[in-house]
Amino acid sequence: MNKKQKKVLVRIIAAAVMMIVLLLLPLKEKSPIRFVLFLIPYFTIGYDILKKAFKGIMNRQVFDENFLMAVATVGAMALGEYTEGVAVMLFYQIGELFQSYAVGKSRRNISALMDIRPDFANVMVDGKLEQVDPDEIEIGSEIVVQPGEKIPIDGVVVDGNSTLDTAALTGESVPRSAKAGDDVISGCINMTGVLTIRTTKEFGESTASKILDLVENASSKKSKPENFISKFARVYTPVVCYLAVALAILPPVIRLIIGMDPLWSQWVYRALTFLVISCPCALVISIPLTFFAGIGGASKEGVLVKGSNYLDALSKAKIAVMDKTGTLTEGVFKVTKVVSNDIAEDEFLSLTAMAEVYSNHPISKSLKEAYGKPIDSSRVSDVQEISGQGIKATVSGKLIHVGNEKLMESIGVKASEIIAPGTIIHVAIEGLYAGYILISDEIKASSKSAISAMKHSGIRSTVMLTGDSRQVADIVAKDLGLEKVYSELLPQDKVTMVEELLADKTANEQLIFVGDGINDAPVLSRADIGIAMGALGSDAAIEAADIVLMDDDPKKIAKAINIAKKCMRIVYENIYFAIGIKVACLILGALGLANMWVAIFADVGVMVIAVLNAIRALRVHNL
Image 1: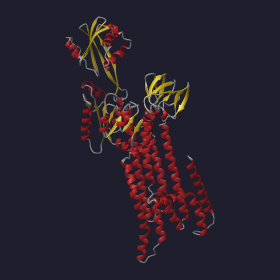
Image 2: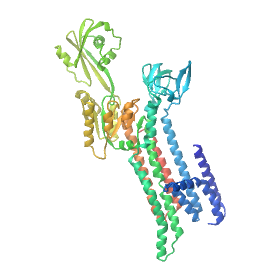
Image 3: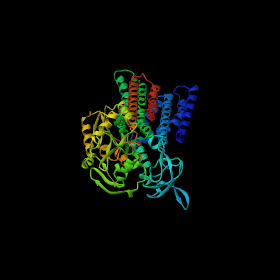
Image 4: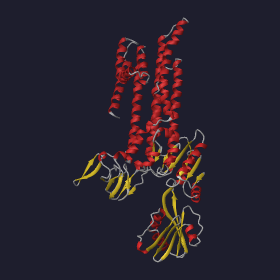
């Protein structure tokens, strides 16, 4: 609780004690002495509300909750209902204090969850480490990060080995290793060794700064319920004020015309009760707070949502379109199978890797990594790359051909017919078929369960788009249980496919596209909701996507959908609850069946319940 909140609490206690003491004193009802004495607790607890209401009138911004409370309580005091006048102001301030504390608590929780903003950077000056503001560090500078410190700026490790805690960014507690040559991003915590890092970005452009900016500015993108509540409050408050005036004047005037006692004080009291009941605090406060809590809870799980409008849209997601490489698969090509004929596997790999020694193709790199030993290039000669087919080379005097079926056919060698989820590299030695190597992009361990979780979350159609071959794509789609798969697509073809799927969906359905955020930027932008996968440190992902998953676990897709659904469920619970209670109490108040104490519940009580409900959106761990 901050100083301001503590001062309000002291005023509440003082006013409550004074009101109780006055109620115990044997004072006459509506006596001048009683009026003057009740003014003391009234002004103690309500002077700031009266001040705000007066400023609103002077600035021609009359119709707000301060004005409603001021008119209602001043009117009650004028009618001699001193206890009700003080009580309304007292309970209103209790509700405001509770709301302020709840919002502050949720903000502190979110700040703690996203505690990635570094306070300083260490630089070496005259042989000593000095702490400087990260804003002052230029690109290319060397900084030192000691164990327990946050990495302040994105860069490359030039010296040292360590493990990094990325939990604040990804929501996952598994540490990542860092060594010389590795890229590291700001916001991670250095856990073990000392690292020397050469910065590659300015502080304002680093990952931590961008993430914090996204979270802090998410409230600027309003959802439909938030926009509705804002418009509703602007129209609703003046309308209920005019209705209260009508309630105070028309019935007495009509009674006077027909010769009955006008009962002015009774109808004015009803109008004042009507005003207190009508205060829209519960809606105006709880709806934005729910989205704020939902976005903060998602941030804890490594799901960055750029605005409450995207939470609203994600809750209606029915079609999930996903890229294959890097989203459902690891995105790293590896040798997964080696089959050799009449030759030892190690020698087979050795000859193949040496033939590929001068190539920088990803497949060549995979073969060299699989061999895993230094390659003596002096044993390799007469290397010739055959476009679209493979490589021919002489290794230790042996003629080696490494490539696809076309290469084998061109030299008159019959290759084995293999059906497997990956790229088949055939090898011929001295014109004889020697075997094959399967290079594949492995399916992520969590992809199958992620697809199942998405369907459980309400996704009716799962679609995979890939530039890979039909054979590989069909195998992956079947393994994962996807409904549709489109293969051999160029980037522009993916956009076309997404547009066709968008045209086929109904108006109430939303289509999400999940990609790696680098090659898929056009499709991320075209979908109803673009979700960037594996985006740890990816500028393209943060810029192009509406939602960014800060690690590469596809299970987070279903979690993001469930967070959005829970958030929207709480939003509509609060809307229906608050409006329902208020309408019922307004009718009772107009009929004279509800007094000022009922009005206090309809205002403060409903607001407290709605705020408590809103805070539930922070709890998303088990979704």
